[in-house]
Image (cartoon, rainbow, N blue to C red; front, side, top):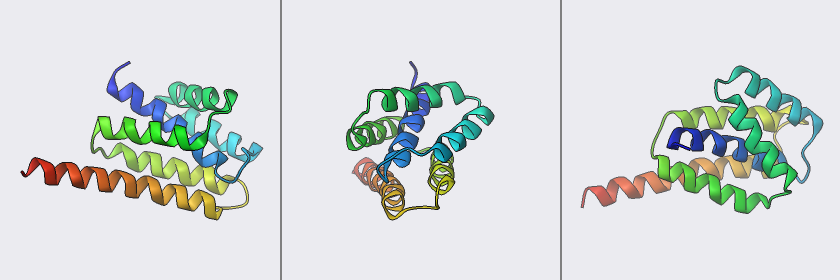
Length: 125
């Protein structure tokens, strides 16, 4: 699996984390996931990784750390805007964005920004 493919697996994993952030994956969130993946060129990989984590009842925090690691390995990319938009779609699908979902979305942006900022500073010597 190349880095780009791994990145879209990470997107599915991240959507799993967001959907489960409020404690339960709701039918509306699954419907929104289907909308996202049906329109996405890497939709199969996204959905497969979401379903894998869900079927294995994976710990959301462990999955989140795996996502962050994959994004750090990939490096800075405009594709993360896609991740953020998809997280918002999933989070708003059922009863609007809950506090737990909002916190996880903010953490994702902060974790990436902090890491990439540190990488830039390190490269400057």
